[in-house]
Image (tube, rainbow, N blue to C red; front, side, top):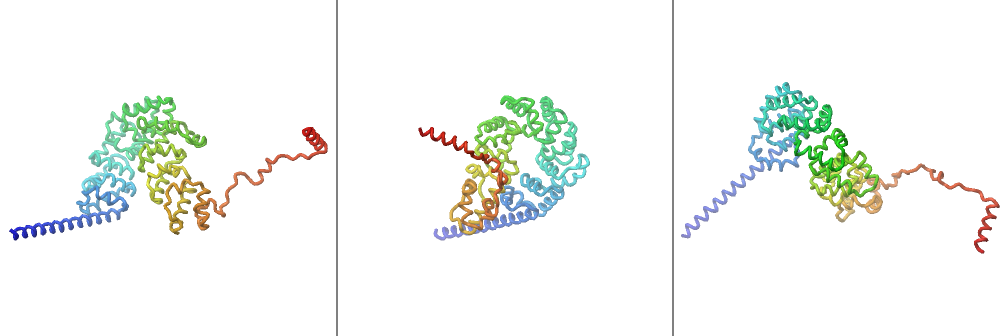
Length: 440
């Protein structure tokens, strides 16, 4: 009995060791495969920061032949697609790396160019994504493009649609014609319709009854005239991309703003419709970086100056906040002033001063975003710059070498100096008489 038990334990131990060895070898092989693929993608310019997550979420790549993957990536680059666009394409739609799919595209591409027109690299990237999504080969896609052009759109408009919203070419003709008819009924001239579609191709994907008409009805219900709405739609068709109820929320936020009159005038300078659309764009920008919509609206309400900045400036500030300052986007909910202050004159110099002092070991406590942004310029200078003369050049604003520009030219005060009148003996006599009478 004891012998059987000992043999069983030996068998279990052996099996366990073998399984552990197999598992270890499998894990090592899997890890080596990931490293090999990561090196391959990096050689084509893919940033290392996205590769671990990308490979973990696309296990089929680990089972792919590395030489075929290399050929697929080379084929994609042969279409002269900009590297940033190509990386985004592969990251969002990794199935475009499938060898047979790319072989079909490569072989049929010359015929596709002759049937359609000379496509731009950005258009090719969009068509590859569309082709993979709807399982269309290049010849089928070129036929769809011909049908789309037959609806009366110019080559310029068609090219723009294929770059920005290629799914339009696989939509039913009735749906596209319905959008065009809606714009005609809305008194938009035919030549302006081409402009609307060129500037905002995604309008072709909206339903007339469930999206476009309710949006116009909502805006009319808020007191805007049909003529005013039409003028703004032609000026910037992106307004038609607002969700139902979104315009009302943006208008409510604008009416509730508590800020200086000058800021409010700069926000509302182009009209309320335009201002509401500006709010929507900035909310979308903040949400695109990770804030929820409610917090994005609060940031805008607390820091109205944000609405007077271009989207490029906002993007630059958020990128600096995350990439250089190493703070999370959630900090904006607590310190919305960060997005309202000047980037070059305030954010960068203050950050540079704090980083210098940290590196020198002069700051022994944690400095948060609030401590960098909220103090006035003079207070920040007194706290972090004045005690350290070498920081004068870094900060600049209150440096002794930096002259503060006067608001008025020298000597202007003399023009406002009261005119002097010489006292006569008669004036002195009258003054004495007045004083004597007041003492009686």
